[in-house]
Amino acid sequence: MALHKVSFCGLDNAGKTSIITAITKRFGFEEEVARLAPTRRIARDTFRFLGVEFTRMDFGGQKQYREEYLKRPEKYLAGTDLMFYVIDAQDFNRYIESIDYLEQILLFFKEEQEYIPICILFHKFDPQLVDDVQINKRILTLKQALTRYSIDFDIFFFETTIFDIKSVMDAFSNGLSMLFEKMEMVSNLFSEISENYNAILIALFDAKGITLGEYYRPHLQLQEKIKIYKIYLELQKRVVAENRVLYEFSDTFESGERFSGIIEVLKFGKLDFYLLFIVEEDEKNLEQTIVLLDKIESAKPQMENLILQIIQ
Ligand SMILES: Nc1nc2c(ncn2[C@@H]2O[C@H](COP(=O)(O)OP(=O)(O)O)[C@@H](O)[C@H]2O)c(=O)[nH]1
Ligand SMILES: [Mg+2]
Image (spheres, rainbow, N blue to C red):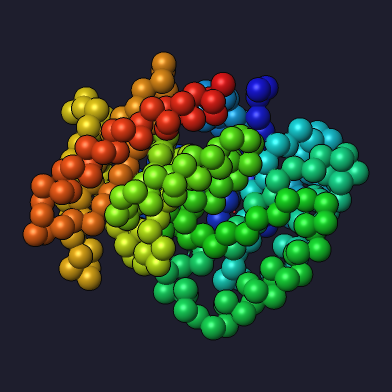
């Protein structure tokens, strides 16, 4: 695969730079995000995923820059493989302006016949707004208006907030998965495996916290998902610091439900992946949990086989 270009577009103040900062840091980014200055023109960085090199372009969203990009889109936008379009979901007054900009960008891609995946992020959908009727209605209306672009493009919607790093990582991971054909097979495999165990979660992350695939027990609460992701981030740090390949743990959800799990490092050449496997803890039969955790080992050859296919 050649060098890939991932573009972040949207109006100024939508949260593009914050999102990129959160994805890159994953820990302790809050302070930095709080004092971000507006991006001038385009900020560019690179990252690797599955052994492929990506350029990430953060398109400063002030009016004068937007006009410049749209005047010479072949210079700025052309060659984009994946676009994240960020909308400040709290800023109702600028919805129209934001759709207009998106429309002009899409018009260019259409003319060029670059039918790339477009991830639209309704950002600043902060935790306290999840049940807010007003904002949910507005977002829904906006989604309905945007579906007309799905005639030409694969459009994906996400609600994100930097106060839930998982929401941002999910959007980013899902976007990237569009560029790797076989990646969805990982989630499929996990849901297959989950039937044999009382799994709460089976997930595979790369070293930067990007999800390659995951299975979550149905009806798992958002708070529980967030808790699990925090545990993963913490454990990953520890595994690296202590140079371990396996870590066992157990913990409790707010509901009082106990769970236990393992995080295991899978190595493929220079690439490290992190397998996270969490099951309900059976207090009457702790032995059984250990047996379960042992069993995941038997599913590993299949998993490794799949990873090998994806990174080729
Ligand atoms: N409430 C809230 N504010 C955010 C969020 N993400 C970013 N911000 C704030 O929005 C402002 C603009 O963010 P920035 O990343 O510079 O936007 P950009 O112009 O699109 O790059 C900053 O003050 C951020 O702290 C979020 O998820 N929720
Ligand atoms: Mg910016």
